[in-house]
Length: 209
Image: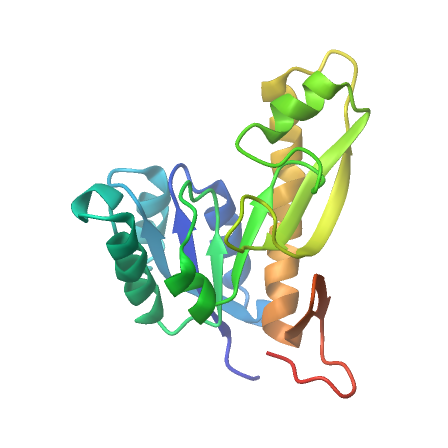
């Protein structure tokens, strides 16, 4: 079997998406392994999950650096030291800067069907708009807010009586499954990006990353 794809996962909270990736990567057939977990704060469950799994961790706090640019450089250097094939932003609450985005492919998730309802309140905004269907998106991160090329999406119905917490929890279940599926496929099959189109798998005449 070819070597597993190397994943660096970034977290800011409980790390439920991280746990799903750790569980999936326990199977050698998955094709990817989490080689490090990074965070922007101490004392979070996401780091504890990594420690319990025997995965190295690092913390790079924004407040420890005089400027945002220096933090961007520092976290990029920490990520690069693990030589990842793919970086996964799994509930990471900071926008990554050019040093990381130019050096690595970064995968992110959002609890809405982009380009609708970007930003920090995607579930709340979808409910307020009265949509009957929402969902989750897996996309490549870029310099904007939830504006990168879309890799995969899955719909989740809005049910009568849903509030933000109930709907968000139902979306999270789908989001974890979709993220695990897409990360595994990208690790096993490779991917190509042409403009805003992301294709998983090698294509004739194109070089897979």
